[in-house]
Length: 146
Image (cartoon, rainbow, N blue to C red; front, side):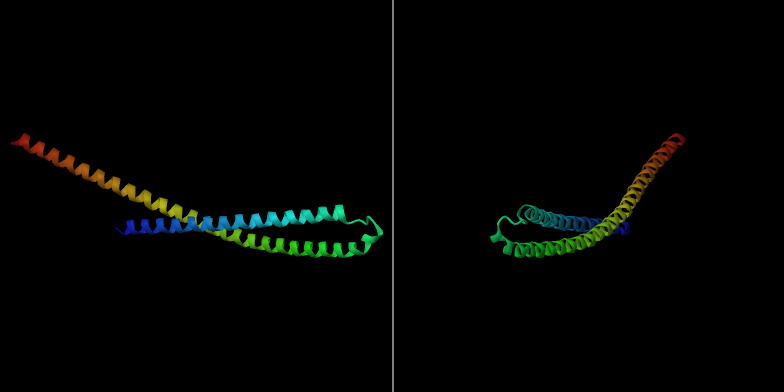
């Protein structure tokens, strides 16, 4: 019975670890999606600088400096956001790896306990069959002697 409780506990723990893995994976997906959006915006800013950062007329010259400052400020903000997301992703990747390792270790212990439980059940069945066979043999031997 003690082994059965241990197996049930390991099964519950395994479900918890699988849920944690799913949660970490979802968080990573969210971060990667946000990183893709930030990178797309950075790419658009670079494209705007390439296409719009030149003086087309003397009237636009005073506005160019302000435009470039605004673009640069946004680019710096987005790069900081990307760095923040990278740090968050690294943290979650660490948690994901740790949880994965724990889940695999738990799974190995669970598999070992299930194997031992099956082996014990098979040995008990074998012992029971041997007992039945021995009793039948003894009954037959008594029948011959009588």
